[in-house]
Amino acid sequence: MWVLSMFFIFVVGTAGSGKSLLTASLEKWLVESDLSVAVVNLDPGVESPPYSADVDIREYVNYGEVMENFGLGPNGALVASLDMGVSSVDDLREEIVETESNYVLVDCPGQMELFAYRNSGPLMVSGLRGDDPSLSLYLLDSNIARTASGYLSSMLLGLSINIRFGLPQLSILSKSDILMEDEIEEIVQWGSELHLLEEALEQSSEGLVREYAKAILDMLGSIGTMSDTIPVSAKDMTGFDILYGEMQRIFLGGDNLYE
Image (cartoon, rainbow, N blue to C red; front, side, top):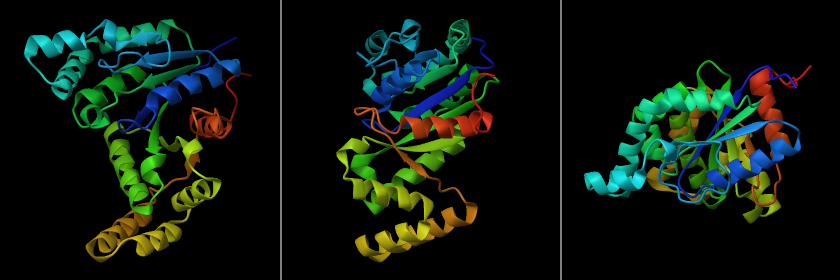
């Protein structure tokens, strides 16, 4: 087996959106497809992730000690731990390269805002990936995205993350197993046909909220940032074939890894 390149996949999303479980399920799916995978945990505060990390930031930063030694709360300790972790990014990168894996799944911290909006987040992402092809999977929590206003606000947050990391990004509707088929279909249509999202917002909002939503949709439409949303269930292991196809499209223009 000859590895042409390492492909980095950064899994991002709000707390509780299912990042760690999706990372574990995607690893399983890729391995069953005869691809080698390295899993990286970037959350210093996680206790028991649902996967065995090949590379783990907790080996470089002790979240509990940071909290105790500096008298910090959970969020402050996470910020400090991530800032400290940046100094070890070269070592983390070296560990990843040594795995010689086809795909590198990077499970980003649960408190996405603390990771993405400080300099340590983008520095960590750029340091880990080096010059290797990379993308991010942005998870939209089905509990939030099932409403038109929730979907729009989630997509705006995703756009912000896209700007911060500067990577090609796929929008993933996580936990799709909790939705009915017609709900999934509607959400997918919102991503590809803005006028349907606008109609849904007009029916469910009023006053300033409606005006704000219309202005935001006009802006998104003019810059062409809306993209298809891929329904995935990490619990039922569904949607990964479509997700893999989209990843291949970005990484290799649709080609396979091997000749």
